[in-house]
Image (tube, rainbow, N blue to C red):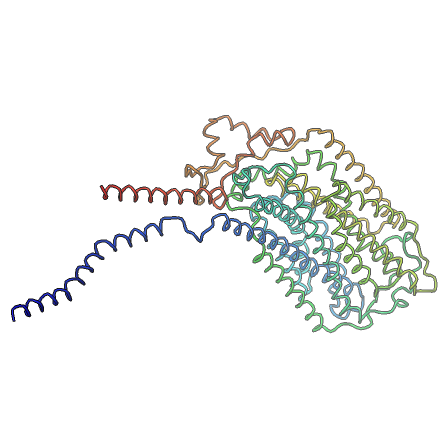
Length: 633
């Protein structure tokens, strides 16, 4: 019995004790191993995380974002000008008709309102050089484009209520916005090319430190982006004719009525179309139809505003925009005038002027004095549409600059336009009794196509050339493009003044300007080939304490490099405000331009942050190993 009892007690111990012992052993040993494994998994390098691959994907998204910005800006500008030119063309034709003026608005004086409206659009941009850089620096490039598109939408909205106090102020507002809009667009496209280069070459040291770009590294991107912009923008001439084709053409008289008093067309014309009938409409379009057309145009104007606001990214980093503004409003006001001391810009001014001449002559002088005068008002849309389509398609020819010298575009466009100007000087048609001239349709269409080729080469050539000359000077792009489009505005004003001159006088002015532009451009290229130094105004460094933004540098300083250099130099920089010029671009490269501010989102900052995180993980692992060794001892 005693042996049986002892055996039962041993069996109970075997059933109860071993599990407790195993549990204690797991708690003592297994738990420590589990915690150490979790710590190593948390602090150690992640097997599935590839830092280089993630960085590559990040910059690929950035490059796609740049392409999206270029396309958005191009389509936004195209829609704005399609709406503006289409509405203005329809409005001028309706207001020209005497019956429309008398029946619709009686003694309102729409003809006089139209003259003052055109004066506001063409005269106001003359003072654009005074305020354009200030607006761009104060608002930023993207917001300037958005605001300008809003002004064009305002012009569309005023046509719902055609009065002196609605049409004329909105036309003046458009005149104010023309130069800032185009200067912002040119600046924006060139900045996108610079950004694309930075995102492609993000591993380069000068990109990580945000130094000045080496010469010529982003020229190929400038050529491509300017070509894409002009290909899309010139489609605005095509879409601008839609109101004419689908609405107004159904209400126009035949040529026998409209051109009954016209005796001659072409080179012998004085003015626009002498003898053109004052009634061009067979019947008046219904007011509700016009309201529907204006509502559609208004919708597209709002669409362009949304495109600029939502789809266009910023042209500069926040810290860069702060530094662009902090050089002082007085300096921003003076710098456009000081940039004219650069012989490259001075010698390109005739090309800037001719660029304004030729586009306005194509849509007014040639289309009216040759096209409408010979073919009739119903064929106006066809000439302008062919011109715009040709300009759009042949803007792709500027891609040849990727392999050919940069003078090819400008000289090629000048040769095409020079031949056409000589042809137009001798092209004269006497109407006499016959007002139907279908035999002239194809020759005029060919001239429209060839003029579009010249426009495409000229526009893309000038914009690309400016981008290539100042590609590394991101701080002065707005000044350079402001000067370009200001001279264009001067040319548009001259075209507005010469409307009553004989056609041969207009063609002679165009030809003389073109020859002068080619000569000046040849002189500029010759000086650059000889490495003649050019004078460029020095842009002052930022001089204010930056508040609200922390510059992430290695020493975690809140001061920018420019402020730190001022403290080191003591009072020596105080005299730099009066020294505003230096000779040549090479001096500017050595003069402190390379001392860029390290932005918070730069590749170098992110890389240093990742390296610091990795070092902290390695230190934690080493300390953990030392602790285990001490416990083992």
